[in-house]
Image 1 (cartoon, one colour):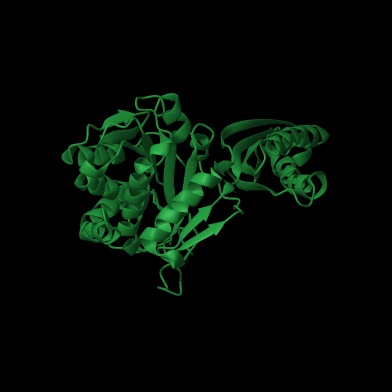
Image 2 (image 1 turned 90 degrees about the vertical axis):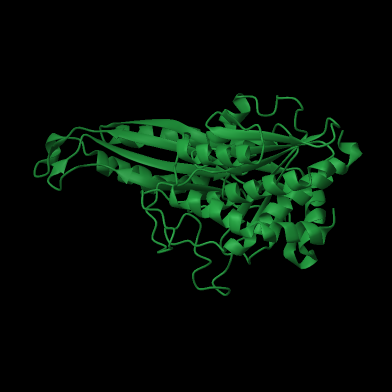
Length: 398
């Protein structure tokens, strides 16, 4: 297959890929159960002749050309966020959820790749396993798919690839990170227990908001005074809830947050210290505190050799100017990381637009006004296809 032919085929599918994206965008679902989203994806795959299977809340399908025993897994997440959309797009979501991280684009690009792979099936030298995964945002989706045996079904994948769009990066620029490319993330909850009372008589109770405020302020001292200056780590509290009325001191208060590091041991140490700190501060103010882990994803470890090969193929397809290789990662997290400990993996970012290109583009990920450039969709579908076909063509991967 010639590169020009593949890019032309992808562009001819642009309208269909955009339709898939907008359908998913307009009807987003969050969490581990995505019945409408999974149903839509399954119907599209079955219409293409794929024997699609629902698995652990997601959808999987194989396409095989020549039976070589080689198999590569292509993964797209498809869950949304619990954010009320404010883009004003014609296909804006109205149900209180929003694809503010681009997962609708990921699923649409992989459906586009499914169409391209079917067109070029006779050239496939092995099997491509398409995986549409739920609950990336909650960090349970990848683990559930792995537990359900997505890597154990024959032929077992020997490599995995995922693409993620990135707002604020020039459209179509592929970022190829080698090594530890993204931080691990642990979600935690601290429940502070006090004694409720009248706001006019705080001495008759134990104020859990006061305790929680002291805990909140103390957490950053763990980063500033207990970790080496060159050890990257971020502790964030994103939810702080307590009380129902201005004149009542509540009986309890809840803080929820995240720990992000590149080292599992550092994460474990911080989790231990957060627990100790919360308990100690609560006790000092006559209350109590309980800390629990809600979910987690490990640091994402890209296989350097595989990433270099994917970057080479991306340069062939998109041009050298559209590929950037790097050895440093960011503090964002991704549950595709769980795959990277089971099979050599490559997780690439694909630029989805900057404000210089269009004032609507470039807003932060997870922002209710973020808008992604749909022109990149055929490129993403073609990149999935080109990388998979080239990997399968290499007999050394057997």
